[in-house]
Image (cartoon, rainbow, N blue to C red; front, side, top):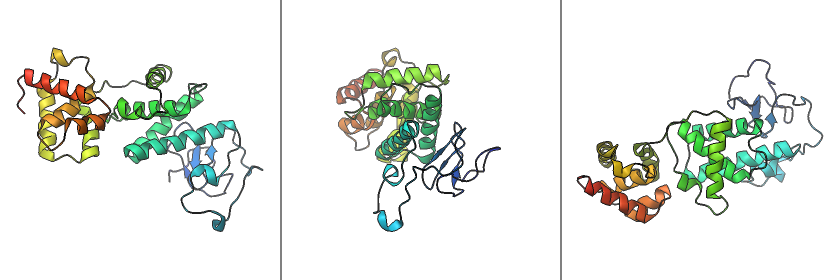
Length: 259
């Protein structure tokens, strides 16, 4: 639990515990017991909408939204967003630190009004993307947009809007930056990981690779390294087509790389 900030509410006005997570800079805190979002102007008395359930009434495995009620549409939007981040993070096996950073990006966007009128699921994916770029462990855009409920075009527009409106300086990912994600997906042999990194270093700056999806180039390098992965395996891992991987492999050979 984070130490309270100066002037921060030290106890949750809903459940009266002091389990306040103050790591999200945009808010005074989030109660880790009931999930109540504490922000500037929060009424410190317990709200009349609170519904307290006994442990006997709570079957195992219920999610956040089924165990507490939110006070208004604002809190409901935040609750939905935080739950969505958790769902996406679970699907992609995202670290706890990156989950927190993605929530922080969403909170800043929410306070700036950037989320207004935008579909929450797609905005969440964009926030995770920006957080991963900030952390220098990019998650491929193709994996963030692989489900039918996320519009790829809107996702990319959201990413651009977040960068512009939140003034977020972001590094441009290189192919080698995606090796961490691939290692997380496959648990790659250390020798193959080094070989893939060396191959990417050798071809860096090659005109034929300029403008190509860096995640696809990284996937091709991992396949080219000789471990028992098919082109379809590595393509699916980063959310590109098998043809993309096949084309990058052909370019590696044209550049004189050794498989």
